[in-house]
Length: 309
Image (cartoon, rainbow, N blue to C red; front, side, top):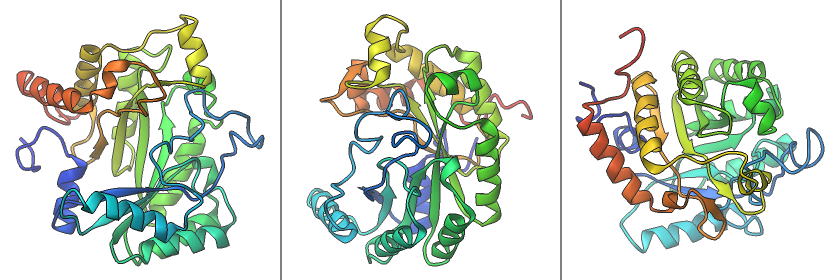
């Protein structure tokens, strides 16, 4: 059926074990940057679903040095299990939205840490100037560098509602330049965005399946306290997905994705102190177990429904 140890999809865990010879964990870092969608360059308040943490609610404190952020998380993780290799994940806000000398300093500090085997950088397609890509390309010669782009959807009407702040053509241009520089690209998508139906979400999967991307995150829409999305939700303007709806939708998405694309995430569990809905999302292990059970029931696997198949 596939080459991923008889699993139904090409998981991140499988890829990391194949590449690095053992299980690898992420340490989430905060480079102290903002976002053009927050500081007034493009807009204020960020994307409609974005909390005050800027998608970095689980990242370390920016008050600490990068080395200290890494060491503190390694200390915490290794106390529970034997771990030897880590990915430095710059998660909070837009992690290429700063002068290149600053980016070079913090990224080099991270990649130089002996426990770090790869660098993953969350950012926006409109914050990737040629000088930034040149820096990432140089670092990529030392250790693997992955760029995570927050696309969320291909549909411009939804992008306008969530205040993404750039057109699909901007994503396409950034992807082309990143791949030309030899950098691996992971794309973030959100399932359950207001106004989108199953066909809309599968259209995003079909589009990305035809792109030259190396990984994808399938993220459930979370409604978090203090966000503009929360105001719309509490006003009854949209409904969130039920658990069974989401499980079936994730499987549909996997069936539409090229088998070579690594699945970095199939759900998410949002900060419990901020999560308004859906509350079932906080039971992540339960959701994953149900997903794997349903995959077996449907005899499903990644790429099953691809049009070329």
